[in-house]
Amino acid sequence: MNFKKAITTVTIVLISGLIIYGLILVNQIFSSNTKFEEAEMYVYIPTDSDYESVKKIVAPYVDDIERFDAVAYKKKYPNNVKPGKFLFKKGMNSNELINALRINTEVKLSFNNQERLEDFAGRIGSEIEADSLSLLTVFKDATFLAENGFNEDNVLTMFIPNTYELYWNTTAVKFRDKMIKEYRNFWSDERIAKAKAQGLTPIEATILASIVHKESVKKDERPRIAGVYLNRLHRGILLQADPTVIFAVKKKSNDFKQVIKRVLNKDLQVASPYNTYYSAGLPPGPIAMPDISAIEAVLNPEKHNFIYFCASVTRFGYHDFAVTQAEHEQNAKKYYNWINSQGVKR
Image 1 (cartoon, one colour):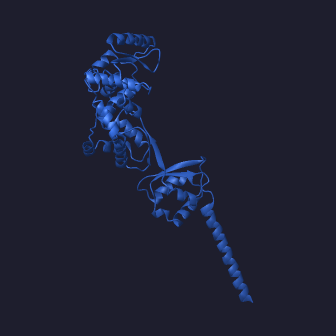
Image 2 (cartoon, rainbow, N blue to C red):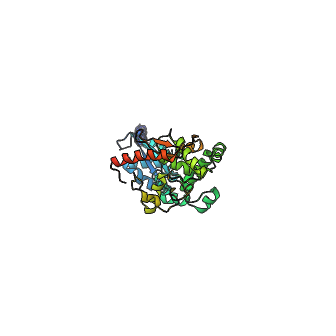
Image 3 (cartoon, rainbow, N blue to C red):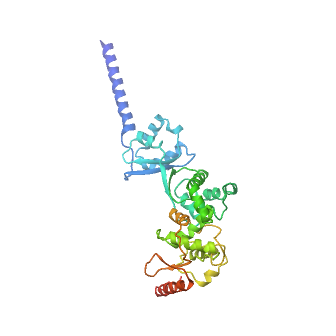
């Protein structure tokens, strides 16, 4: 009888122990284990991180790191750490946190209107793991440039402004290779034929588009402006585009942060292949990254006889166009009188 009681007691103790262990296990796995106030947030795990590095990264957002640690080992996560961008939601339990660290979230990356390759590398480096220096190095790689028909002056034309989805831990090389693929997709046979009809290569069309882009924010006016510059190119007339002068001045001083609202006569004399008052034809590279509407404006220009245009003082943001120099001088006089009245000196 005493033996049976002993067996019963031991059995009850074991069952109770299993129940308690089960409750502890359930608590470890399924109870909330976050300590941030936001509804959701992202954590970034760098390439080549080990599990100890991951714990340091997630520790500020996890309420009980020991519970997290216990579940991580049960799910064999320490041997399968993945780099990337991962979504944590408020109230997630340890099991859900570990599962979240296995789902790499894509980054939606948008870019446009970058003036220089260096600016662009900095922009991308702020969004993905690859830093600006590594990006700039692969963009300027001599073998890559030669194989794809670019040089350091015009390689910015390779990047088509848009929104792209890619992983945060994308390497510099993989990003560059994705961009050249997108460039080839963009420059379809139809677009190449349209550029050729204007006497331009895709690179030249993009360089001209960068000037059109800088001349006007009004997308509906860009085909007319493109038509003016194409008329000038086809007639062998200097482009005389003020945005190229501004770029040349900034490049000469190596100060691209300065704001220039007015081009001075002395600026027109800056000896630079980017200054289209000084040098004939197109600049050797873009003066900014044009958006797609500016490229399309060059490929589909308005057909007209205008040779000149000047900022309008009655339709702000737009321009007044002219066929003759006399007409243009009248328009320019109105603009100079207006800008003087505004006190704009530079």
